[in-house]
Image 1 (spheres, rainbow over the protein chains, first blue to last red):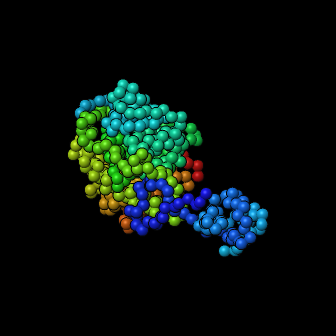
Image 2 (cartoon, chains in turn purple, red; image 1 turned 30 degrees about the vertical axis):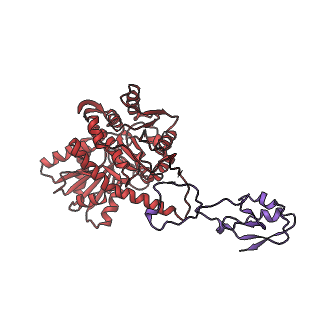
Image 3 (spheres, rainbow over the protein chains, first blue to last red; image 1 turned 120 degrees about the vertical axis):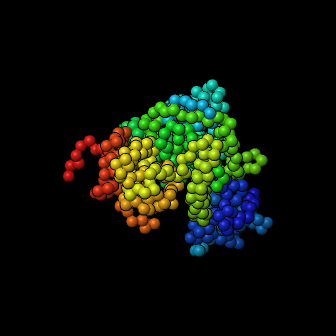
Length: 96
Length: 389
């Protein structure tokens, strides 16, 4: 499965850009979680594409690409589960 | 127009019938019960075509009204005291969601000690919940404000729920002659409810989403601004009401003999009538006293207060409330306006009527005496025993 499409979100510039109450068209993710992270996972060349990290990532931020796997750092919280689960130690945690 | 002999609750129910809410969710509690009984009878005999939902608690009553309002329906619910406190969580959902629900609250003491009689501690404890709060004086004003409240709440500039407060028993259960407007006039006054803030198959939306630190403060500022803007809408609504029905309440406050008054008593709710009589008595003796009825406390009528009080020597706030460890909350609010505007006058607080304690003509005369002679700032009126020092 590839990463779901996110609609581009423009932060409101003036008060009238905000909706009335809490009613607005769905499908926008307006908050990123990257600030929660102390360390970021890096997928190295040792990756054999076994997809264990893809299956275990609690936030679903690891996604398939044409060349293997990639990580959506906007929403990765740096928990490190991918590093622990990787059978080839192909994922390294790097301090932010 | 017809005339009828109605209690405050009955009169409010007649106002609700004229407003024709599509959904009414109710849970009974003394002294609100008779308003939901009357409305149930109206739905039963089809003189009110509304979906009446008997729910299992006050929390559900307001949640149900929120759900119905989110479908674009005009909604009504009513509560009192512990019931209001039980729906406290939902109060903020309704105001934050900008759902223009109208709710009647029968002002009643809160436990413990358990008590079913009237005071204003229930609603005043919820001043910060984002609802417009109005306090009415008599049965006619109850009916009229049921209609006016929808007109205010549903204005797109406002989109804020309104809580109409009736003093428990002394107003909810006291019978008076009341004029009931015709449905034709009521329809002329109150247009059908229309909003974009609703679920729709044609235009699907997320409702009640979360907003993090990035945007949350803007939502709260917008809510605050809508409440400030509602002051103008309240005045326009009162003017339109006067044009169609011939009755006006003066908007956010209503002064009585205040133009040249040195000593002004501020009241809210049903005690105003008796205070007005005492003002007349003292005026006959040549005393320059006056009265200011605080009709709305949210939004707070800051400008009206400054205009009414600026030439007074001393003012008093009579309220059925105590914020334990400080003073009456209305007094705190009034003092803030006086300080911000640099008015030079003495202010006194009179805490009375807690748990349904009677406020007598003599009590009110004593209060005006206190304004004239000065003394302690915060006073408990009508304590039955001496205070042990």
